[in-house]
Length: 241
Length: 118
Image (cartoon, rainbow over all chains, first blue to last red; front, side, top):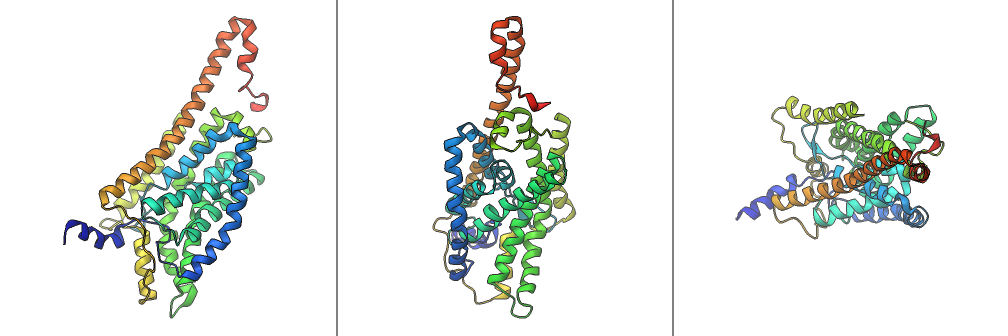
């Protein structure tokens, strides 16, 4: 047994992937989650094409939002549960460009990680895209909009949107796993408690970090790229932070 | 802004360091590895039916790819931010120097100074 083999053996537990691992969802669930995602991807690609055509001035900002998602999902951070996880980074793009466009960008990030890093997986891409790119984006965007409507200052709305989008992603992951693997004795609820304590609890401090970083970067964007933000519609009513 | 930036960055760093200190000898594996264990506990017979088509051949190469991912992402974010900050400074400067030469002042200042900003 060479060192390579030793690594492979350990790899089962060492390979860090906070999304559902390759091959770990039964085939019916694989197909179902892909089917759920397809309409979101189609609408997302349409929104993306529309953005490129009608607001080319915002493309650098779109690149920054994609980059933010890329860098945050590469950072595996220790948490209070004694295990590691990583933020998702979808909140910024969802708040800036809306959840549809971010559903596409988030899926691209997941695809990169599945292909090159053996992180997440191709068979589980549908389920992972649903939790992170779709639910994560919609929650971030919805919480942001709702908080603004309730009169929250912009930084707080961005913080809450990004943090809750991040946290919800891992709650959905737990539900997806519990659904596919209900406990023999305690059923769905028992499995949900188990997976929830692994994924969702680990994620709490990371979600706070993601919210803070998203609010920080948004502060800089508001200060220096107002014309682009006006174009995306984020500050439509000429609001100020 | 600068004060807030430092404060927020310190908070983020603290959120990552505190778990290391308070949990002492924890292993800090991935939450996914624990989920795998949980799945085998629930359904001992479950065999992953598909494995990654390509896996990084070693931990070093995996960390290379993760570092690359972070670098590309950070590059994009700060390229954009640097561009915007530079542009804002350039325009502010043009507005100042333009004030001495009245003919060029107006067109240089108009793109960023949005009237509703204040």
